[in-house]
Structures are given as structure tokens and as C-alpha cells.
Image (spheres, rainbow, N blue to C red):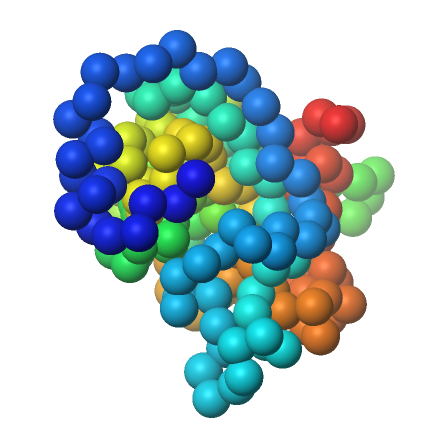
Amino acid sequence: QLLPTRQKALDYAELPEQPKPFDVGRYDEDRRGMYSSSLFVEEGSREETNRRTIHVGLDIGAPIGTAVHAFENGIIHSVGYNPDVGDYGHVIVIEHYLQNHNEITKVYALYGHLSAKSIQGKNPGQKIKKGQSIGYLGNTAENGGWTGTHVHFQLAVNPPPTHDMPGVVALGDRDDALLEYVDPRYVCGELY
């Protein structure tokens, strides 16, 4: 659930933590009705026709503070904080190299909705080892206002200009987006 304001997110973060099961939000899933913030409407368009609702990453839900690990060796591309309600909060993007026989493919993995301490001491160019803990799931005051704590994990074939990638796209942009933001199950395995 997305809380409507930053203050509501801060208030929710002060509540006692409830046990949370692990869960998975799917790639290429149409999530109409979930994204209520104006952040998810393309600028200059009619809201009902260009609301971004197609999820182009995986959401792996877990309790606040759960460690997030790099799936492969890599180099930090960028780190940052997206403060808007409904956005990622604290983010790390890592450039990873995948080897398939004699061919090496570069991908950029976004790890979003992290805690504030996750990005401390992280800098572009820093080497990351496969399996290394790169951060922790943030609470609602840190993760963009989401009550269902999770890491948003997304792969891009091209380097993003900053620490940001669109986690959801409009239906009209779906086909192109699925080519740019490939299915994360390619590296995570069949989670569903």
C-alpha cells in the first residue's frame, strides 16, 4: 500500500513492526489502481490514458532491515535518494557483467526502497562482489512511503542517466520497455 503523504509515511514508520512474510510482486504485471500519486502520470497527457501501471521490475517483499545482496560481481554506477511519495526512496544502481559462454553482457541493476544507511559510503566506481550485502530494506519513512516493505529489483540493458529508472510504464510504452528493462528472473530464477 502506498501512503498518501510523506507525513503519513513518517507516522507509519513509528508504529511497532509487524511480522511480514516474504512475497513477490511480478514483472510485466498491470497494476491498475495501485499507483494513485501524480508521479505515475506522464507529463502533458490525459491521466486515464497515460497512467503508468505496467511493472517492469520484481518486488521482493520482506521485513524491514532484511539484507539485500548483489546477484553478481559489479561496479556501483550510481546511488541516490528519490524523495517523492511513491518513488524508490534510497537507491543503488550496479553495473553487472554476465557471461554466457564466450559472450559478456553488461546490465544495470536497480535496487530500490532501501534504508538510508544503505547508501552511506557507497560511491560510483566502487567494486561489489557477488553475494555482498549492499543494503537493507527501508521503512516507510525511507522507502518512498510503501507499507509493504520490499526491494524493487530491475534490470536495464542501457546505462541510466542517473540513479533512477521508471519502475512502471504506460501500457502504450510496454513493448519498448520490456526490451529495455528485461525480465529479472533471468538472473533471479523462477520466483513464480
